[in-house]
Length: 105
Image (cartoon, rainbow, N blue to C red; front, side, top):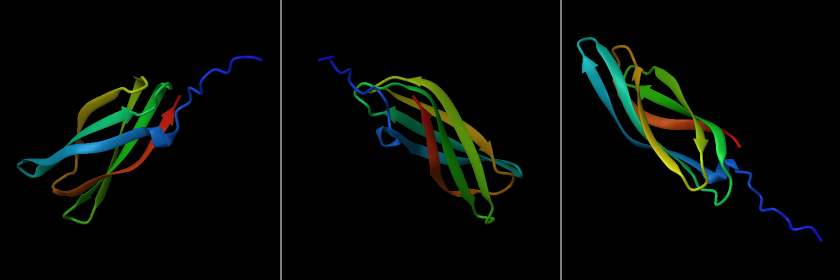
């Protein structure tokens, strides 16, 4: 009998993404939202070659803004933190959530 290789594919359930913090950065009549996030490959053996995380920002003006980040090469058990800055005109963010994620192994 042939030895079976362990399954090295990663499912979306084994990839996690979270917002660690966010804040409004107001300069005159212009506002940016600063978003800090963390992604993690919770698989024991599978690597993620590419991933995307989609964010939604709700504002006090009732307008929603959408942003995304992309990354590569997230090894089994590895996590990575990052941040980005999104322009939201003269609104202030009231809530930041993750809408969806995408991965490719």
